[in-house]
Amino acid sequence: MPILKQNCWKQIMMLGLISVSVGAHSELLFKESFDNQTDWTADDYVNTGALPADWFVFRVDELWSPRTGYPNKHPSAEILSVNSDKARGGAGKSYVAWRESYDPGWKKYNSDATLVKYFPKGVDSIYVSFYVRFGESWTPKSASKLFRVMSWDDTSPKLELFQFFKGGNSGPIFLWDYSSDDYGVRNFQAYRGGPHGENYSFSNSDISGLPRQMINLGDISLNFTENTVGMGENGQNPKIVDQINGGYISDNLNQTVTHEQVYGRTKNWTKVAFYAKMNTEIGKADGELIQWINDEIIFQNKNIPWVRENSENKMVKWNTVGIGGNDFFRTYANEDQHEEWYAIDDVVIRTDIPPAEKAPNPPSDFLVN
Image 1 (tube, rainbow, N blue to C red):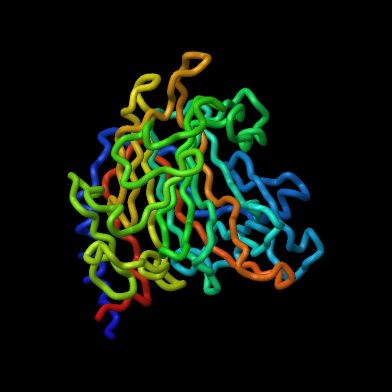
Image 2: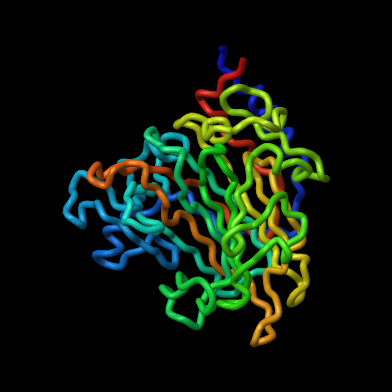
């Protein structure tokens, strides 16, 4: 099978770029390539409290790292010049998270590496894009939280922004997980209401127009085939490129989609983006969530009451964005001390959907029939 030529790849990606809506007043809030960051790890944070420059807070959980007496293992997060092979373009730095396969005997998410940016003024709408790459030993059948956007009650200590659930200090929240199970790779989303510890749980009766039923407080596990029907620009079906076979995943709605079909082989970077807009009034179901893969809209819903009736009769704004997270990963025996990595690079945060950006670099191993 021949390798798809670079110019063909760019033409395919431009098809997605042409249809993306453009915000008239999209203000750049934050941009991070990690290249200019001082070398840093999660162990540095635990030992000294040091954070990467211009980031707000970090949450760490790790069993095996140099700090805990395992010199040949990795901290749960690294921004290091020696990891240049894990940076987009093969030079500079990226945010590398190491997850651990561990079963504590109950349904606990482990190996946390959540890095958070805070915007004191907050915004009514927010757009976040980043590139993600998965390591050579990546195990598809697993779950890892990779992204979140939240409203945090900034009157509490900053570490308490991680106090969730009813009565916590954050909400509404949107989370996106990498997830794969017996039904293939999933587009796993989690919706949590607000403000700040109220209206935490969502159900399908709260948000109309979802492609399947919510579970567990507002989680929804979507596939990349029939659950994307009608979710593209102007109600069209998204054209999600099949990174292994060529063509589009949406051309075969009955298939079980693999990790590599969506995210490519290990050297491939995938651009992911999200737009969240707060509802305009308390209880009004006009909040939004839009998602892109490689500049192609694959999901949108404009019926979300992010903030519902509450004890303080107030609205809130989006003010925190997080990358990385904790992991539900227990494929290997605990004694194997198995760890594997993913990398995030070139984070962009704006107040609205931006003008179409340059198409992402083509994967070096994209094959077609």
